[in-house]
Amino acid sequence: MLFTIFINDLDVGLVNKVLKFADDTKIWGKVDTLDEINTLQNDITTLEKWSVRNKMPFNVAKTKVLHLGRKNGKHDYSLMGTVLNVTKEEKDLGVTFNESFSPSINCIKVSKASNIVIGLIKRNINNRSKEGMLILYKTLVRPLLDYCVQVWKPYLRKDINVLEKIQKRYTKMIDGCKKLNYEQRLSKLNLTTLEERQKRLDMIQVYKILHDNYNVYPKEFLKLNDRSGRKNSSMIFIKS
Image (cartoon, rainbow, N blue to C red; front, side, top):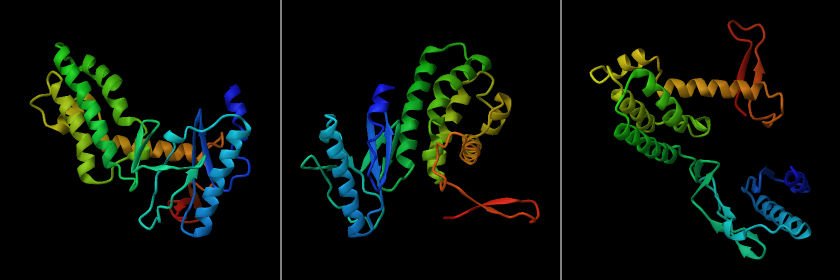
């Protein structure tokens, strides 16, 4: 709590947006023009002055730049007199982001982690009853598949299939399911496909954003257009 209070004024005077999480700080902004590039560098310099004034220097070696957008000029930025290293991908709170924001990289990593756990269960669990195996699945495997999936949800069929194969493999291990096809196994185990589950998680996230009682999300995150009087719908999303 004291640390949070101490860094509370970190973003004072900055033009671009800053995200603070514990001792991790991120700054981002548009860099389509030279003025925007200079503004971002000025913000970094402002952060540098704050760190000197408060005797809390940034770890320059761990500070990296991730350029986004095909037309990005990939300008160099400096902190504490050092040109910052450029990275093509970075892991943030368990989710990996790259220059193209492709979900494929997360699908591959989640698939590997899940298959390791499944292999461990397969080698060590002899009693594969429906009840016990579902508890293990929902406790050890599915959290890996669900973690922040609203951020990296796959949209390409090849990526969707990579994740779906995990659930297909696991359900086939359960007693009484080996000879059933995937749809029959899901029905027997009262499960849905991962694709359907991800859509449900998306809808839950949309609801949380629209009913943001604690002002967690920017007001422009989702915009609604009033369609009062139109058949079957009173509100729709609009593209900003």
